[in-house]
Length: 348
Image (cartoon, rainbow, N blue to C red; front, side, top):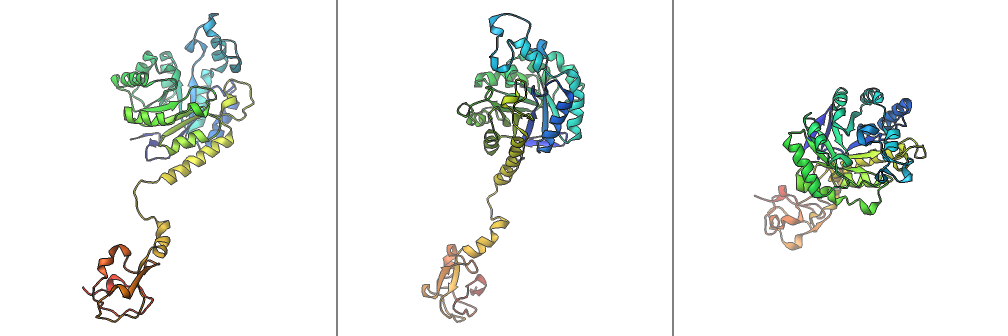
């Protein structure tokens, strides 16, 4: 399973695809946002992801008690939170352009079908559907209609909810779907991550899987990559102490670089899956494996007995797993003591 978009390939035999999530860390400042593009590119990431919404996209003005949010988010209610966190629409085009200029694949999360025409106008190559929106059938249908690849996060979801979302996307003939396991807690504690659920989804749905990470540090993404995640998404910032709802749990540039290097190393470590003698092992194999060496002078024409040789290091002669090639066989060459007995020394 693999997918190539704008020269970037996502697949099970590829290095884990790294998605740098700007989220609300744009701080409604275009110059700051453009600098974040450079941070992701300089750290070696593959993609830049935005979020396309405003307060009216996600909620309504209301004083109902259910609208209240935890003070950790810095606002009193959902409308205020999203009004401050939403990225201005006019930022999208320059950020998409800067990302492509720096070799990053830009795309965005869509939250409302009403924004589809705007995002399509950006030539967005992939759509992300956030965990919170995966039960929004109207959105699933609208995004499926583009026939573009979809990355679907599954935070808070059970298998029945994921099944429904996947069936909706399949019903409306969407593009390739990649499922991201996710724990929608900010930050997410390790004991709630359950990366094995990523493998459960792969087995259940037969689709590529990855990990949308909200833990602190690099360990979560690196573990997911080692377990077979084709993609990892992570929020990032230039300073975790900045004012704003997402900076506090976002990765620093140093963590981004650690993840990028780590996923490259993991890809090298995982290899092709073919079990063979590697080039690096050839010297060890020739020195450390045993083979037949004469322990006394042997004459041409004599038959070899067990008293004539030992299997010792190095592997210059007949290997010990082919002892029948030696026992009772006639030599066609004389072999001095201390020399290997090779197949070329055996008559017939």
